[in-house]
Amino acid sequence: MGVTGPPGPVMDRDEVDRALARLGAEHEAIETSLLALQDHAGRRLLEGAELTGVTKERWATAEASITLLWTYFDAYTDALRGARDIRSRRRWSSREDLAELTELLRGESVTVAGSAAGTAATANAPTLHGAGRLSHSFSLTTLVDRMNELYASSLDMVVTADAVWSALPARIDLLAAELQRTRRLAHSVGVRPGEHPAGDDLEHITHTLTSLREQVVSDPLAFWVPAQGSSAPGGGRPDTTVYDREARALEDVRREIDAVLTVRQDAEQRLVKLRDVLSRADRTLAEARTARGEVLAKIAATEVPVVSGPPTALQEQLATAAEYRRRAQWHRLSPLLESLEHKAEDELLRARESLSAVTQPLAVRAELRGRLDAYKAKVARHGLAEDPFLIERYDAARRMLWSAPCDLRVAEQAVLRYQQAAAELLTAPRVPEQGGFEDRRGEQ
Image (cartoon, rainbow, N blue to C red):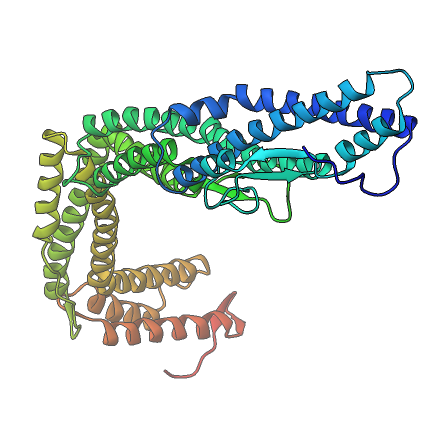
């Protein structure tokens, strides 16, 4: 190479030795890093994979960068070796040797063939300046900076792809295994595609996971979220958005299947309970219809509500539920049983309310009868049971309450008249007469 003179002041021997030591340490560190990159598991996987998308593009760039890295490193090694040879010529380097070393160590003394850079670099990779030139010259410091840039970008790509491959495929495989177990369980309880929404969900999850795994294997960089503000190689995390969504969907399906399994285990018991509730409702309505006839016969001047018959729709649905159980269609039986249980309880409540409404007049008559007898007993305890006036009013009230049909309004007035007469008699003062007592009361 032609020497045009050292850049700046000529270095002395101590400066040359320190520079050679520093460059030697850098050379060793760069060589160690390049060998580690060469042996990196992620790089070996990238070399053997059928890549697509952004990963394919970036790996082409990274491969070119790695090739250029070794080209630069070889040139760096040759330059360093040349400088060491000059320094080792003599113990005390001459002025000419020091000038030449200064040129090698500080000047643009490293020449790299332009063809090597042109064939190794791509549009996105760092390249030598002036692609059309036959050769390019660098200083050792500039060459180290370029190698550091190429190494960082190449390592980032390799580490990122390896991180995604280390995280996602294994998790997808575990979820796929759980999916297969869930599919078998779903099939055993009749949860199948086209017959149950959960079966359709399982099909969708299966297709999504299969597609996701293929995409992750062929294009791992498409599933990487870079860390904000981080410049370290591999700074970021795998993008698990799709995986997490499908995992949650599978968990929802599992809960649905667990509910169906619960139905299968206690279906017969629930059907028996449903039949019992509906039977009690029917008996209550029948009792209400009988009571209505009795009320119409025994109570006068009273509006008695009409009692409807048992709903046939519930019996039909109950028969459908029994058929689902017989055919082991648990996924259809589950929602039907829940609906029937609510409707059956509502029907029993309606029947009881109907019976209460129909028998209310009889309850009123019974209450009036009890009140009349209670006052009669109270009068008897005070020794007034034989009072003619009270007997007359008691008999009048009793005839009305025990006659059919009974007019409740008239009977209630008769009971009130008896109560008033008894209260007046019980509170009236008494005077002694002929060794006894005689009640004083005005003419009624």
